[in-house]
Amino acid sequence: MIKAIITDIEGTITRISFVKEILFPYAKKQLPDFIRQNQTQKEVAIQINETKRIMQNEKADLEIDLDLEAVIAQLLQWIEDDQKITPLKQLQGLVWFEGYSKGDFTGHIYNDAMEFLNQVSNDYELYVYSSGSVKAQQLLFQYSDFGDIRPLFKDYFDTLVGGKKEVQSYNNIIKQINIAAEQVLFLSDILQELDAAKSAGLQTCQLLRDGQATSDEHVVINDFTEFDIEDFK
Ligand SMILES: CSCCC(=O)C(=O)COP(=O)(O)O
Ligand SMILES: [Mg+2]
Figure 1 (cartoon, rainbow, N blue to C red):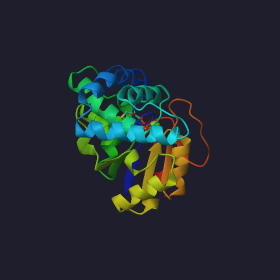
Figure 2 (cartoon, rainbow, N blue to C red):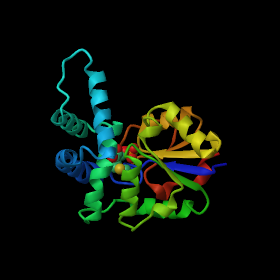
Figure 3 (cartoon, rainbow, N blue to C red):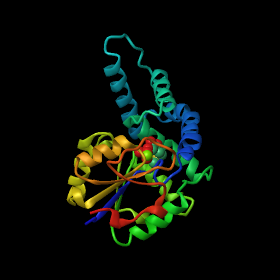
Figure 4 (tube, rainbow, N blue to C red):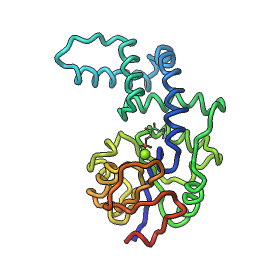
């Protein structure tokens, strides 16, 4: 019997184009000056150092110039390539705060997803697991199209527990929420994330909103109007 539901954000409850056409371009535009101006702030300095560490590991055999502008160039390239790399995701969360709080945009939530979240939050513990940082997740929910929906969620997880395509990440979440894996349902649009969750023993449901790759290993729905809790053991 399902006791908890963990939802992905982009492609599952939020439109992919909101992330790719609004959030990412905003971060791309604002990130360089944000980093230059806040490089000594603790939260920012940690992510700059982490970016340098990854750059050094990736290019161990090359002499690379790791000044601040090289770090910024790397972060912009990661945005371009939609890399889910922790220091980038943490910095994006800090940058998006300004856009949300100034009212430049609100967090997109599908109507059917909003109805679903309202319904299931009465009967199940609701969690979030996204590649967006916990800060970015909470901003999207605080400034959502439906107002502040943060109270619906019990807790939030990001790539600090591990990447979403890795089985160990789901083991880590299960350990933290202290509910048996088979009693937890994971929702996502991405097949490899669902495969990893299933390998960790979670039940799975794929949202096929944008023609993603799919398989018959998971329950598949086009939107939450097709969701039926009876489909899960
Ligand atoms: C939730 S913050 C914006 C989305 C984002 O940066 C991202 O990488 C979304 O990935 P997801 O794991 O939610 O598909
Ligand atoms: Mg997704």
